[in-house]
Amino acid sequence: MSNNIVISGGQWGDEGKAKITDLLSQRADYIVRFQGGANAGHTVCVGDKSYKFHLIPSGILFPDKISIIGPGTVIEPSYILQEITNLKEQGMSLENLRISGLAHVTMPWHILIDKAGDKVGSTGRGIGPTYTDKFKRVGICMFDLLDQKLLENKLDKFLPEHNNVLEKLYNLPAINKQEVLEQYLSYGNELREYITDTTQLLYIAYKQNKKILFEGAQGALLDVTFGTYPFVTSSNPIAGGASVGSGLGPTAINHSLGIFKAFTSRVGLGPFPLELDENSPDAANLRQDNTQWAEYGTTTGRKRRVGWFDAVLARYAIRINTYTSIALTKLDTLDQFETLYICNEYKSKSTGEIIKDIEYLDESILEQYEPVMTELKGWNTSTFEVNKFEQLPELAQGYIKHISNILEIPVSIISTGPAREDSIFIDNNIF
Ligand code: IMP
Image (cartoon, rainbow, N blue to C red; front, side):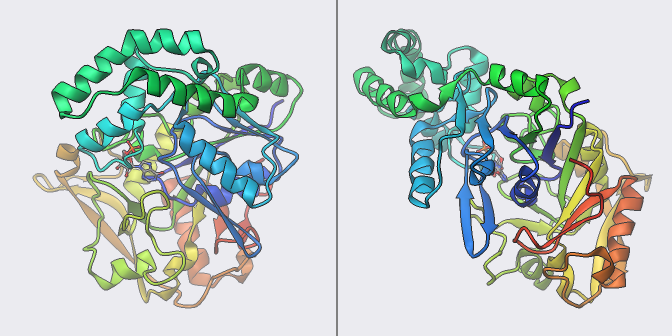
């Protein structure tokens, strides 16, 4: 029986997945990114050092694990080379990094188009246009960068169309084929040692009963199919994306862990039913303004929008990910509140009907409801760095049990600070 896990965000990203991934990576043999690209940003704190990752799985911090950037990801070669250089400068070995030859390449036109045509508050990393070209079947794969003929053929076939879009639609200068060819072959050369068929690697690992951890980026509410469309990313961050984006089928994955912050945040545009006024004291407290953990994007530095915990959206995420348990992160953020709020239901503005489950997340549907807030007494004492459930204040234990009850799902891990040690395992056997 395999013992593999997928970890994915249950909200709009930034749930603290990196911390939990890092914790569980210690128990894994293989760590696999399966979707997204350098739009993601993870910070992992080890001792007094903090490491920032965009594309490379944080599993690279463990020299004995294989870290895979899978077929479903999109890669901007200069970003990943920069990330490799940074990690090497911090003394990391990149020997165990593998990049799928099938991953699509973010080309210069993708970034230009993303910035010029953005309507959702994207990260500007070219993610949407790269996936668009993949599905339009005019994209370039990582293995193309390893062979001059392949790359030149594709540029000959596709570049005129891309240049047409750049010039006619966006009034931007065309891309010069020779320059892009030379630049991307040179990237290919630099990345050659890492590029491989990762599906074979993973299948062999699976057959040998190795432990595989699939690391999602972004979150369920940003999923291109199930999220707050069109204010979403262009990939499938949900648990099911792990199979599609890695090439290892769903029967190989038996745990699905959803990561939720003890409140909610979002960057970029799009509906957010529980959003607090950004200037309110509660918003500033949830954002932890003026602390080193303040809620500002790792990738873009943007101030995150924040609100209380939304159980209606959490139920939706639990459903579409079929989570087996959830992790609650940033519990300590709530330490300073006298009163806490949770939204367990939405109320129809027109009929007064109360719902606990929502069917679609379209803005026009979400607008028809107002959140019904439950007031809870805050514990108002520090839970920072607490690592035993019994040592949490009773009211904090109650908050966690309440969330578990209303969502009808076990909470398996609680995070009370950025370091590995600041964690409570309620179920130590999930992986
Ligand atoms: P894109 O992924 O850059 O195309 O951006 C699409 C939407 O997803 C925007 O609202 C971004 O702010 C959001 N987004 C993308 N990556 C992340 C992430 O890692 N955390 C949170 N939001 C993200």
